[in-house]
Length: 182
Image 1: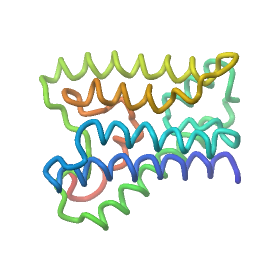
Image 2: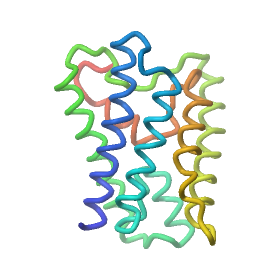
Image 3: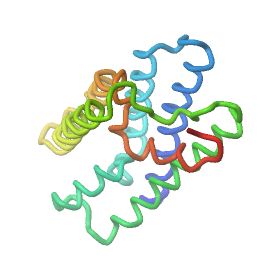
Image 4: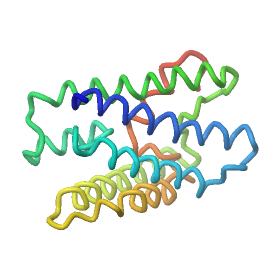
Protein backbone atom coordinates (compact mmCIF):
# COMPACT_ATOMS: atom_id res chain seq x y z
CA UNK A 1 0.00 0.00 0.00
CA UNK A 2 1.19 3.50 -0.78
CA UNK A 3 1.81 5.90 2.11
CA UNK A 4 -0.89 8.36 0.95
CA UNK A 5 -3.42 5.55 0.67
CA UNK A 6 -2.51 4.49 4.21
CA UNK A 7 -3.04 8.04 5.50
CA UNK A 8 -6.37 8.34 3.70
CA UNK A 9 -7.70 4.95 4.80
CA UNK A 10 -6.40 5.26 8.37
CA UNK A 11 -7.96 8.71 8.74
CA UNK A 12 -11.21 7.45 7.20
CA UNK A 13 -11.41 4.60 9.71
CA UNK A 14 -10.50 6.83 12.66
CA UNK A 15 -13.07 9.48 11.75
CA UNK A 16 -15.75 6.91 10.86
CA UNK A 17 -15.36 5.06 14.15
CA UNK A 18 -14.78 8.06 16.43
CA UNK A 19 -17.36 10.37 14.93
CA UNK A 20 -19.71 7.41 14.54
CA UNK A 21 -19.37 6.76 18.28
CA UNK A 22 -20.36 10.38 18.97
CA UNK A 23 -23.40 10.06 16.69
CA UNK A 24 -24.50 6.73 18.17
CA UNK A 25 -24.03 8.14 21.68
CA UNK A 26 -26.32 11.06 20.75
CA UNK A 27 -28.95 8.80 19.18
CA UNK A 28 -28.95 6.36 22.11
CA UNK A 29 -29.08 9.12 24.73
CA UNK A 30 -25.65 8.38 26.12
CA UNK A 31 -25.40 4.59 25.79
CA UNK A 32 -21.85 4.74 24.41
CA UNK A 33 -20.84 7.13 27.22
CA UNK A 34 -18.14 9.74 27.29
CA UNK A 35 -15.44 7.22 28.30
CA UNK A 36 -16.69 4.90 25.54
CA UNK A 37 -16.18 7.61 22.92
CA UNK A 38 -12.70 8.36 24.27
CA UNK A 39 -11.88 4.66 24.24
CA UNK A 40 -13.16 4.35 20.67
CA UNK A 41 -10.84 7.11 19.47
CA UNK A 42 -7.89 5.71 21.42
CA UNK A 43 -8.29 2.07 20.42
CA UNK A 44 -9.02 2.81 16.78
CA UNK A 45 -6.01 5.13 16.65
CA UNK A 46 -3.93 2.32 18.17
CA UNK A 47 -5.23 -0.19 15.63
CA UNK A 48 -4.53 2.16 12.74
CA UNK A 49 -1.05 2.98 14.05
CA UNK A 50 -0.29 -0.74 14.22
CA UNK A 51 -1.82 -1.33 10.79
CA UNK A 52 -0.35 1.60 8.84
CA UNK A 53 2.54 2.91 10.93
CA UNK A 54 5.09 0.96 8.92
CA UNK A 55 3.70 2.38 5.65
CA UNK A 56 3.17 6.08 6.34
CA UNK A 57 4.08 6.78 9.94
CA UNK A 58 0.34 6.80 10.77
CA UNK A 59 -0.06 10.54 11.29
CA UNK A 60 -3.82 10.78 10.50
CA UNK A 61 -3.66 14.42 11.54
CA UNK A 62 -2.35 17.40 9.56
CA UNK A 63 -0.76 18.90 12.67
CA UNK A 64 1.24 15.73 13.26
CA UNK A 65 2.33 15.63 9.61
CA UNK A 66 3.47 19.26 9.73
CA UNK A 67 5.29 18.63 13.01
CA UNK A 68 7.05 15.66 11.44
CA UNK A 69 8.16 17.89 8.55
CA UNK A 70 9.49 20.44 11.05
CA UNK A 71 11.34 17.68 12.91
CA UNK A 72 12.84 16.32 9.70
CA UNK A 73 10.93 13.02 10.02
CA UNK A 74 8.86 13.64 6.87
CA UNK A 75 10.23 15.12 3.67
CA UNK A 76 8.47 18.41 2.82
CA UNK A 77 7.66 16.97 -0.62
CA UNK A 78 5.16 14.59 1.01
CA UNK A 79 3.35 17.13 3.23
CA UNK A 80 0.72 18.35 0.71
CA UNK A 81 -0.13 14.77 -0.21
CA UNK A 82 -0.44 13.74 3.43
CA UNK A 83 -2.76 16.66 4.19
CA UNK A 84 -4.91 16.00 1.13
CA UNK A 85 -5.11 12.29 1.96
CA UNK A 86 -6.09 13.05 5.57
CA UNK A 87 -8.80 15.55 4.62
CA UNK A 88 -10.08 13.20 1.91
CA UNK A 89 -10.33 10.35 4.42
CA UNK A 90 -12.12 12.52 6.98
CA UNK A 91 -14.55 13.90 4.43
CA UNK A 92 -15.21 10.45 2.96
CA UNK A 93 -16.00 9.04 6.41
CA UNK A 94 -18.34 11.94 7.07
CA UNK A 95 -20.14 11.44 3.75
CA UNK A 96 -20.71 7.78 4.66
CA UNK A 97 -21.92 8.74 8.15
CA UNK A 98 -24.26 11.33 6.61
CA UNK A 99 -25.71 8.59 4.38
CA UNK A 100 -26.16 6.31 7.39
CA UNK A 101 -27.54 8.99 9.74
CA UNK A 102 -29.12 11.60 7.44
CA UNK A 103 -31.17 13.27 10.19
CA UNK A 104 -28.40 13.75 12.75
CA UNK A 105 -28.15 17.53 13.25
CA UNK A 106 -24.38 17.86 13.77
CA UNK A 107 -23.01 14.63 12.26
CA UNK A 108 -20.72 14.31 15.25
CA UNK A 109 -19.16 17.74 14.71
CA UNK A 110 -17.53 18.95 17.89
CA UNK A 111 -19.30 21.98 19.27
CA UNK A 112 -18.07 23.83 22.38
CA UNK A 113 -20.01 23.39 25.61
CA UNK A 114 -18.18 26.10 27.57
CA UNK A 115 -17.46 29.72 26.74
CA UNK A 116 -15.58 30.43 23.54
CA UNK A 117 -12.47 31.57 25.45
CA UNK A 118 -12.59 28.59 27.79
CA UNK A 119 -12.89 26.22 24.85
CA UNK A 120 -10.11 27.97 22.92
CA UNK A 121 -7.63 27.87 25.81
CA UNK A 122 -8.47 24.27 26.69
CA UNK A 123 -8.31 23.19 23.06
CA UNK A 124 -4.96 24.88 22.50
CA UNK A 125 -3.48 23.41 25.68
CA UNK A 126 -4.76 19.88 25.03
CA UNK A 127 -3.67 20.06 21.37
CA UNK A 128 -0.18 20.95 22.55
CA UNK A 129 -0.18 18.06 25.02
CA UNK A 130 -1.47 15.71 22.33
CA UNK A 131 1.21 16.81 19.88
CA UNK A 132 4.15 16.48 22.24
CA UNK A 133 2.83 13.19 23.58
CA UNK A 134 2.42 11.65 20.14
CA UNK A 135 5.77 12.95 18.92
CA UNK A 136 7.46 11.74 22.10
CA UNK A 137 5.95 8.28 22.23
CA UNK A 138 6.34 7.67 18.50
CA UNK A 139 9.87 8.96 18.02
CA UNK A 140 11.74 8.20 21.22
CA UNK A 141 14.26 5.36 21.32
CA UNK A 142 12.51 2.33 22.79
CA UNK A 143 9.23 3.88 21.67
CA UNK A 144 6.19 3.37 23.88
CA UNK A 145 3.74 3.26 20.97
CA UNK A 146 1.49 0.91 22.93
CA UNK A 147 0.60 3.95 25.06
CA UNK A 148 -0.94 5.76 22.08
CA UNK A 149 -4.56 4.75 22.86
CA UNK A 150 -4.17 5.81 26.48
CA UNK A 151 -2.71 9.16 25.45
CA UNK A 152 -5.24 9.87 22.70
CA UNK A 153 -8.25 8.60 24.65
CA UNK A 154 -7.15 10.36 27.83
CA UNK A 155 -6.69 13.70 26.12
CA UNK A 156 -10.04 13.33 24.37
CA UNK A 157 -11.67 12.46 27.67
CA UNK A 158 -10.08 15.40 29.49
CA UNK A 159 -11.05 18.03 26.96
CA UNK A 160 -14.23 17.00 25.29
CA UNK A 161 -16.72 17.97 28.01
CA UNK A 162 -15.83 21.61 27.35
CA UNK A 163 -14.28 21.92 23.90
CA UNK A 164 -15.84 18.74 22.48
CA UNK A 165 -12.56 17.28 21.18
CA UNK A 166 -11.39 19.74 18.63
CA UNK A 167 -7.85 18.52 19.31
CA UNK A 168 -8.20 16.16 16.38
CA UNK A 169 -8.53 18.78 13.66
CA UNK A 170 -8.97 16.38 10.76
CA UNK A 171 -11.78 14.73 12.70
CA UNK A 172 -13.44 18.13 12.79
CA UNK A 173 -12.85 18.87 9.11
CA UNK A 174 -14.98 15.99 7.87
CA UNK A 175 -18.47 16.72 9.26
CA UNK A 176 -18.56 20.50 8.79
CA UNK A 177 -18.81 20.62 4.96
CA UNK A 178 -21.53 17.96 4.85
CA UNK A 179 -24.94 19.43 4.03
CA UNK A 180 -27.19 19.65 7.07
CA UNK A 181 -24.50 19.37 9.73
CA UNK A 182 -24.25 22.15 12.31
